[in-house]
Length: 451
Image (cartoon, rainbow, N blue to C red; front, side, top):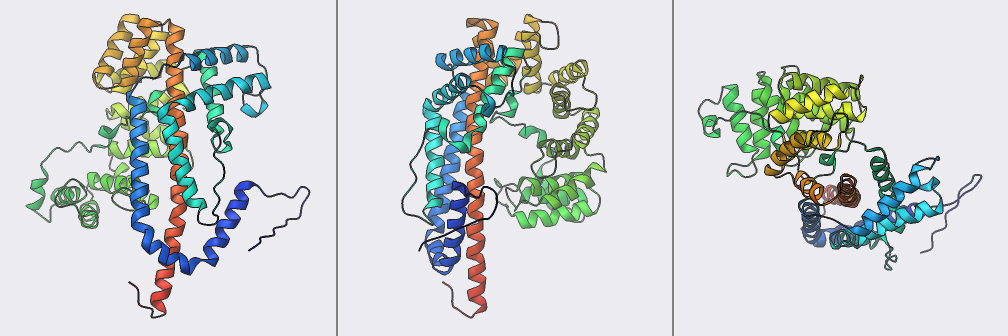
């Protein structure tokens, strides 16, 4: 079959991505009935392959966060790029850079791509892309180097930002790119044994504990639908922890299909009951801006309320907003105060951030002894960035240690970009699965027997 497309306008053209989408849509429509049987035969294999790919990607990200990365070529190229940017007056975007600077940036990306972990991750990304392309063509496009792949051009601007950060001794936040999360922040703080949940089924606390146990995928009683039923009974009686758990469950989309509408409904209900965990999670949602439009004002307000209730995670997040210039009235002094409160409670990222600021004199006077104390405490809790900073500061000058961290941030950021793009492509395949369900429903309606 030959496809002919035309458009009217001043400069009509079709991009490569547009052409692939065009082919894909035609293939799905033309072969939809044939695809149904293929999907039936391949779904189990494809799901297994996808799970394996995701697990492998997660494993690579963990390795990058857990291992060291000290590439002398990357450090040298970064330092040269800093030198070029020192006198540069134009837009700090890759497309506007002179050829010499672009070559430096491409060189850094090429060196990062030589890392075995990145290479493996890039191959996984290509395998996933090729699985999709096979739907509508037999010949696979030639694989190209990472630095030349337009789908990952954001890494080039990330290189520029890292160089600018080094140039201006800017404050960075490694938790933004770390695999280590703040899962402890989502704990509801209630430590009663779930066994108590089976005693008084009309009691909202018992209903909550029962629902929580059903939602625990490590429990013998794991049953998400049953868990939601019990949590709703508790939430409708006004129990704020049940409201929070419902909202978090719908937001995470791990044991139930993600539903941001239901998530916000229950989280705001919990917030109205002064639940600090709901306030912290709402702050994160509105700050991140993936499921709702970014709203710094709401995020700041939620963090402030949770921080006032003693949440070390909210204190840290609010401090970050001030240091990043996202708060209404930014204050480094207030940020340091919040970081200190959070660090005093033992939160590892607050200890790390405050220790790093004391080490480099970022917004506060240098204090090497206090910096080492804070960084050592964070390292003891498993914060590998803190340990790397301590190790590298001993063997490199201050600027050298900064460059090592910048290299590591770029490596971690690159893994993030590849992984996020792979996730987007995986979500695109959900369209195929929806099509399969529609065909299934149509055939049932026509009285056809389905295996």
